[in-house]
Image 1 (cartoon, helix red, strand yellow):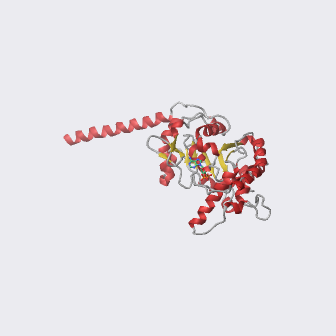
Image 2: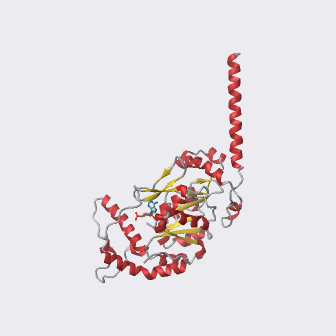
Image 3: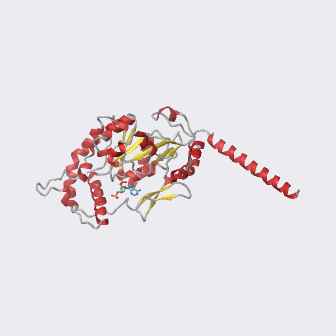
Amino acid sequence: AWLRQKLLVLGSLAVGSLLYLVARVGSLDRLQPICPIEGRFGARSQAEFPLRALQFKRGLLHEFRKGNASKEQVRLHDLVQQLPKAIIIGVRKGGTRALLEMLNLHPAVVKASQEIHFFDNDENYAKGIDWYRKKMPFSYPQQITIEKSPAYFITEEVPERIYKMNSSIKLLVIVREPTTRAISDYTQVLEGKERKNKTYYKFEKLAIDPNTCEVNTKYKAVRTSIYTKHLERWLKYFPIEQFHIVDGDRLITEPLPELQLVEKFLNLPPRISQYNLYFNATRGFYCLRFNIIFNKCLAGSKGRIHPEVDPSVITKLRKFFHPFNQKFYQITGRTLNWP
Ligand code: A3P
């Protein structure tokens, strides 16, 4: 009788806790929206939704991202794999990873961790849009998915392909001062060569044509930095209002105001704060703080030390990029502090 009484007490305690938990989760789902996500994301996003509840559930999403989700759990939690509503299309070495990771601090944003290379890779593109969607992370229907593949910006076929998927998609382009970006690009390739014990040319030799002593426009790192040329191809498909230019140099030194501009462009309520970003003196960069427990810096491959480059080559490159930069400012309406 004593044991039965104990079991009864324990049983009712367990049922009580369960009911409390169900009621609590239910009430979290019903939290009043803090701020509506307005406008341009279509009917669903026009509905108001509780960001705090999304933040609460993020841990759960993280588990699912690790591949621990069963079909039943996906259904139970109303999770979906959504096509991106915004894409970071480039520019390579502009700070694309930092931008994606920092936007992911926002409770309404879910990032595709890997570069998917759907639109720039013919083999992937041939697999169809459903293949692409299945590469996307699980998210709640009210969240927006963002992916980044910097090769999109410079690949000929991509604008048309993205247009065919979603003609009103939002496009983020993060740029850095073109000469610095070109050197960063070179540094990445150089590191790859060194890893394979291969030798490589000096930057000066690649960037300057030895016959003419002019800037070598056949060198890919130079071509990629002529932002206006690439952007003009995109403008055949998308109006300029669908692009937002992020200043990659300022994202390094002062990330918050840049992120706030992106939040505005994406019609997201401002949720990324100074709390989420802290300067790590050892890394020499801002790192990310998701909450009291979880923070992270970007991988060591971000923020490499650049080789020293002959100042006369830098001057030549800066002179070369100058007119393209002016055009870029004119088209985008964003003037940057480039020489
Ligand atoms: P460097 O390695 O030349 O310094 P991408 O992600 O597009 O490849 O861009 C890499 C660049 O992101 C790095 O270039 C680095 O300067 C920049 N970056 C911006 N914010 C950063 C951050 N918080 N941590 C590390 N790198 C950052």
